[in-house]
Image (tube, rainbow, N blue to C red; front, top):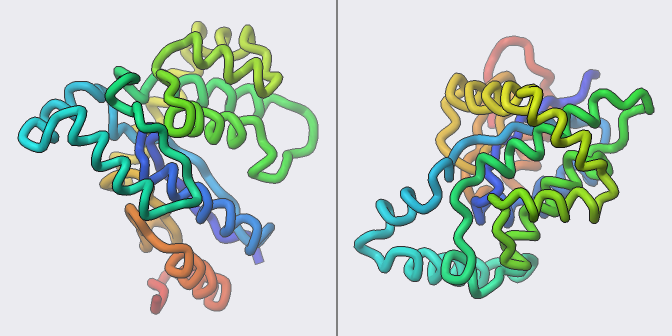
Length: 229
């Protein structure tokens, strides 16, 4: 039986995707080669300042959004959230971080070596490092200097990343991600898409819900009809 394909859509500035990382990792550890993760980035914070100022203008603006993040963090002790987010550090956009990550993905796919397990891939490690840089260490991940440091920490040649960006290959790949999200009516971050788009699990979805959906697809392989779950 071929692996169950899971399209995972997220924005690196989304706290719910940061929280969901543990669930994604548990899916991979539990199901192993029975699942195949296809990573996409969606555009939730294309203009982060504008979004927060508009959505939170009657709820305290940046300070109100910071309070919201702190309240979320209290509910999920497995993540660390810096108290200065959106107060001391305010990334302009998630798009530049996404562009960096698509460049890493392109470099990874050109490697002639056998594919690594998902969590060991440079693209997956870079994505987690990017999320931690913002949420845990309060780094401005819209800043290219931060990207360069992340690449250095992961022993990824930044010159190769820059080449993918300057050639517009990374931009084309990111645009395809955003288009893919629109085509599949992705409402936000994170979203797990299974069963050729029939099942979408969006937002703060617990691990057991993910597990049940995947188990059902393994038990009853797709034959063109929706799963009972």
